[in-house]
Image (cartoon, helix red, strand yellow):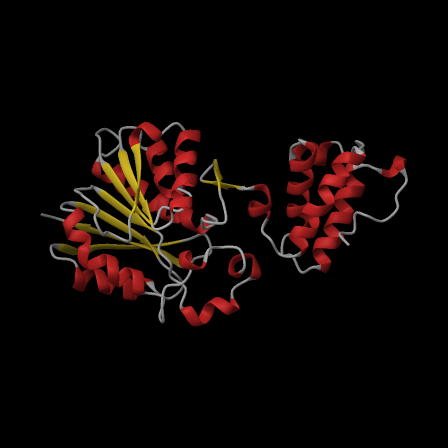
Length: 300
């Protein structure tokens, strides 16, 4: 039972009452952000904004909206993420469609965007066309965001999942960058034709043995092939890095990394890429002060 189905007088069908009941249900289920999640689901059900819920707490809510809300709260109580319930996740200020075939893009990955845009500023890429490759594009969040932020750029997103590529293409259409984007069914760099100026990648980097300990929102709802990085979490880096020089003749690569992996990935880049500029390696922290991405320049 969601906590919303108990008998209630029609006169008490107010936004604050419904939000309060939803919060209690989510708290009981161990959800980490019960109030925010309750507000997002109530807002989505009623068509209101969260600001409206706060500003007009005594506004009544239609019984039909309450009936639609109850199963959504039940799904969140079962630890399905709000973004999965709504089919959408905000990323770098833009809404992105997601599906069971795609990773749910998270705020930590915005660190990679910040790193890539910092490189773009230093290289003068805002004033000239560049080509971007996003390996394992998933929802297309990285590629679409970079194309939107760098309007002279074009890019290719690859993935092993045809279903994920359809979502990525839909997001490119949604954000008006599809004319500059192409999506290809590829395994890592197999069959990918360069050259590119910038390669970005958020690969699977969770060690196989650690997946069972992930939060249920991740373990049970993100696709396994977007999480499982092999025995030590580094299998995909080892697969991609030796091929980088073939598609990145002169430019930058930016990898997202998991906790404790930055130094090892940096060493893999130093040792595995011909013409690597190891003196250019940069490690960037996320908002939680964890090393979140590793960047390196490759030169002719």
